[in-house]
Image (cartoon, rainbow, N blue to C red; front, side, top):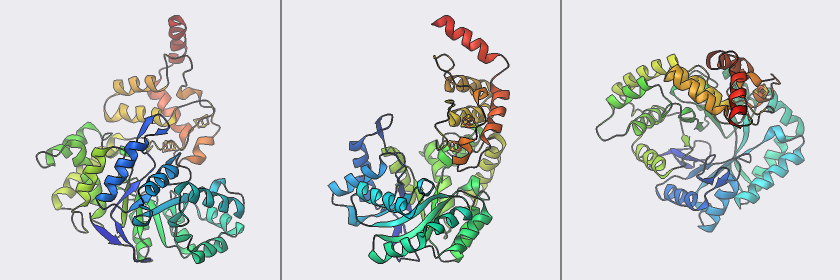
Length: 399
Ligand code: SF4
Ligand code: SF4
């Protein structure tokens, strides 16, 4: 495992961080504690020392805290967790959330504490009105918070304003080869680094879109350039991660590893990735993959599910996935996926055309997707006129 120094604290951080949003589950919504424990123990044994969770990741803080306590490993790792600031209306709410995170994590201090999913400077100003600066100062004085930062999903100008607005210890941005000039982007990465901040990277694989959901032609390009014996999936992951670790401004790359194979593959890549490691041949492969990727993906949905639930029950990410598939694979597959995703043969289907344009989802989307507008495009492409009526009749006949 390679390590990079956090220039603010001097901590030696593993370049691969464990993203704890999607631990393995035994059934939907239920974390499989045994498998999760084995994964975490293997990760720590392999040198991973940075674990990223959040107040809002269902069950994640509790699972991580329980496993670290059971194995007496709290002191061996750095824990990052996040404040759900949009749920807070006062400094008392902030304190309550912080105490809850500590209680779930079974610790009395957080190494890296982030304001979760900040998109604008205005949001930070709202927290200032609560007195968050004094609260942070007190937490740092008492040692309850070691490093303070924020995770970001907004535009580059807002990112720069936020960086300049406070004496941050670190920041976390969405960054990958398909988003080099999106959100904070490379310009934001360089700016934060110029201020001496360590930078934690999230969405390195764009929610899997740079791996198994790449267009078939792009997968072929990757497979052809991969060394013999490397699987197509591993080669795609390797290309994306090495592109990031090639950049010295990148401190830690978070990966949400929920299988043993993902962990093994990522560790293997992290074992040898240093600044300047990306070869000319890799760059050529990446340029071609990116060209094909940009050609075929229409909606930049990462499948994070933050927009759910929709009040009328639309499975937004699945419909966008079907729409993208209709370009990256073919129209017919996209249509099949669409009708599966809407539950067209069930008793309670929810079509793109059911959208009432309430806008609730858009406020929560970190990718700032104009969801109702995009759903109209989904409907036009994948849901021919009268389809809903016909499916209702078919469904009733079956009942
Ligand atoms: S705008 Fe449409 S998709 Fe979004 S929450 Fe409202 S009804 Fe659901
Ligand atoms: S539409 Fe936005 S919030 Fe919803 S899953 Fe996609 S990226 Fe996430």
